[in-house]
Length: 329
Ligand code: SF4
Image 1: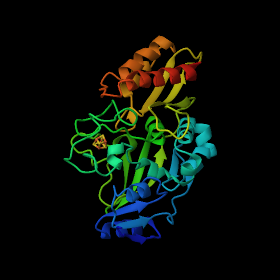
Image 2: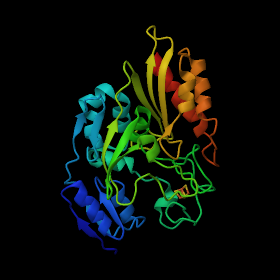
Image 3: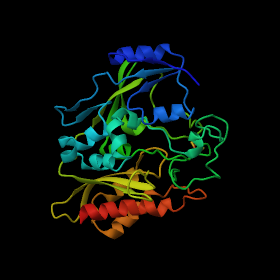
Image 4: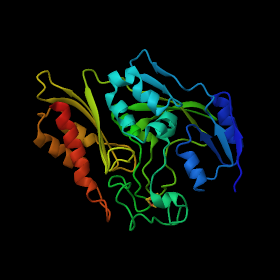
């Protein structure tokens, strides 16, 4: 049995200091990923810094129209908050499509941003896995890669898909991640937070050493927009996305033309995947199926399929087409 130290700091600065002073430390929030991985011996922190006492549980509208979410706001509270339901329907829907009620009651906003991949080779602790043990290889490339592996943003080192639904909605909305660290506070653009695997799949995010996520600030909602999250999976609950889309749209007054569009994809990318080229191609175009099919193809033009997941390319395109069709109907 491995032992570890445990501490409960009273404020974010103390948390950072306690994290800094341990050889290998991890911040503990809801624990829905971390405790699993500790029990599986995939993560072996020498110290758990329990941040649950920190005052990071508020959802506050800012004077410039943005919404600040504390890192410890649970997925359930965020999904059901009146401002989120009214102005960020895509986020509420994405959260409610994720995991189970019990997990959503524990999982936090910051923890969801930091969610680790669901690749079984990463979690089994023994297979070759460059993410868990750099340089050991990637068992998924020629192995079981149907469900939780990507077709966009992959590398020869790692093809695991980012598993979060919430992050896909945040990528579409636009957000900043606020972090506190040894050098003070800083902001990271949400689209820059998660990193592509490239040659360093063990480095998953832009956090520096000992930095702690304190808040996520959502961009102000697009005026007059409508939005939706569509998740396609083998069964309709408690299942990761095979492909998903978060779409936010504004239409012309007669509803026949797309004025502005934001599209992000889940289940198919190694990070929450913003489809900017597809968005640009939609602007000013008629809201019709042929347009939607064209931009969906564009979103996957760089896709690379592996032995069992080629079906994700047409499925991901369908996730875009159906979401656009339903939002413009
Ligand atoms: Fe590891 Fe990534 Fe390969 Fe899975 S896909 S075995 S996480 S390197």
